Length: 135
Image 1 (cartoon, rainbow, N blue to C red):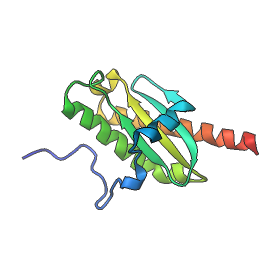
Image 2 (tube, rainbow, N blue to C red):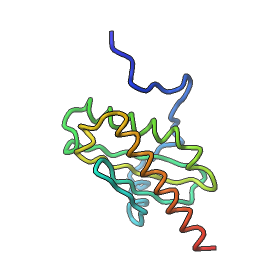
Image 3 (cartoon, rainbow, N blue to C red):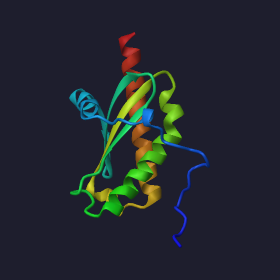
Image 4 (cartoon, rainbow, N blue to C red):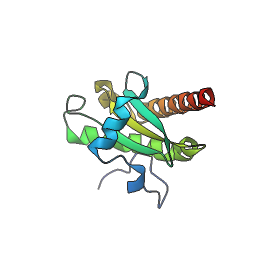
């Protein structure tokens, strides 16, 4: 029997398809003119002006050679994004790509979640600042 995950999602909480970046073209569009924020664990690229926030995650084999480690990182990123989604959707949505760095493999669940929450909030602030400059 497996131990329960460190932080379980609320019952019925899902990460629906409409909240994901799925196609290479969607990733490329964001990476062409991204707003970026980074720390030792992640690099986050984002682009505003969508109806609802969407997430794309990249965890390469260079970052974590074992699939179980890559999946663990992705699971924690998705959960942090899901919990912050309503905050990110306020005003307008944000398309976000999270690129994991090799240090993420050794980080605890709490460290991963804190890092991604901090970066997502920083991105949201920058997008809000851009919108006020345009007005």
